Amino acid sequence: MSGNEAHLKDVYAADGNASALSRSYDGWARDYDADMSGWGYRHPSIIAGMVGRHAPSPQSVILDAGCGTGVLGETLAVLGYTAIDGIDLSEGMLQVAGSKGCYRDLKQQMLGDVLDFGTGSYDVIVSSGVMTPGHAPATCLHELARILKPGGHMILTITEQAWTDSYGAAVTGLVTDETLSQRDESQRYVGLPGAPEAERLPARVHVLRRT
Image (cartoon, rainbow, N blue to C red; front, top):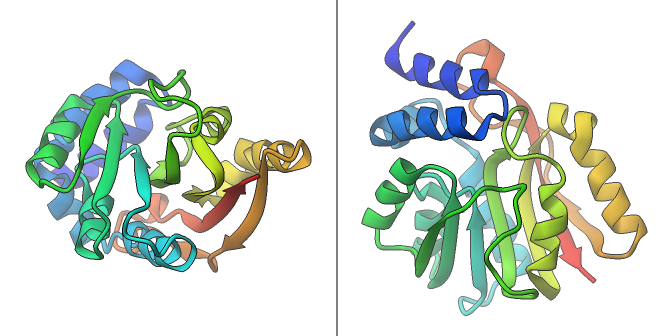
């Protein structure tokens, strides 16, 4: 098993345990960008396209939820977005993200917990590769919806397995109670086509609007 495959295996072996997940990502931070690029990481470019479609103003205030090393933030910054904040559970990942100079602010926070932001703080919330088995719980959508401005957009990658397990029901509940509406979604694709076969998880980018 190569070093990059071992890191990926450790991440999924953590199975939602915050301490184990944080340690796994801390240990991977230095090599993460190169490994993900080598596997053909698709999520950031597809999310960026959806941001451009639904929130084209470069003044949009954006939260990158589970920002990791800042791959998505860097992509959005290249497109002209300047007000980007990020949160992640891994201090090692946040250090790498901070070195890229594309974030206005970075905080160590865990999706699924109460977030340290006021209600209606963001025009856009993006999340790349986080809504997947063993990572953020589907209950995190309620808190993300709280900090999203009315009329704002939540643009998330969600794997098909996570959607079936819990995220689909969570989205349906938020749509039913008129907190969110479903606005758009991508076609089905594999986020890491070059990764080991077991980690080639099919996903979609979902666009949800705060009512």
